[in-house]
Image 1 (tube, one colour):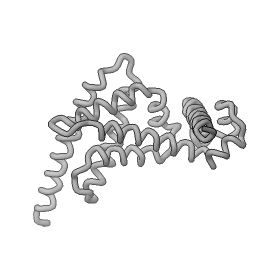
Image 2 (cartoon, one colour; image 1 turned 90 degrees about the vertical axis):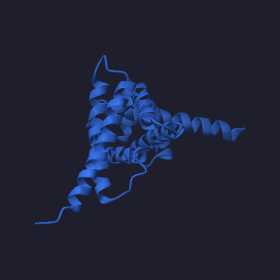
Image 3 (cartoon, helix red, strand yellow; image 1 turned 135 degrees about the vertical axis):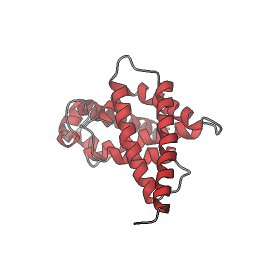
Image 4 (cartoon, helix red, strand yellow; image 1 turned 135 degrees about the horizontal axis):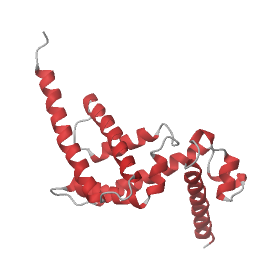
Length: 194
């Protein structure tokens, strides 16, 4: 019984710290956030902070891990069949919209440089099934940057189009963009050099 209470308390404390970091990132860059300031915002002691994390970057990394798990879970829950990617995107965009403040921070310039890498991993999971060639890596990186920009613009609109409509646009870009780019690369590789 004692273990359960401690686990709940630990989860609550970590949630307070993560939420405080997101709050601070609304107004300052990640590299400028201090442990002291974060603890004041979270209303926790520095010792408590260090019991759970060794740095501000560790908190930020945990926020991205949580987001990645949530998005991965949404993607995996989507049943197979025609239009699966669009349904996955709709579910993911609904989650993003529900967590608008969090994603505005994660996608902002106040976030860490590694945010793009995290987004790339998410896009890579969504477009799985393709070979993981160097060319595919370029495409995934390109799509991640584009998707990040699209979501950023969408989250800053008020009112904004429904998640389902944006999912349709992104689905079309992903499906037709990748197919055409892959066909182009194959054609380029097949052409004799002059």
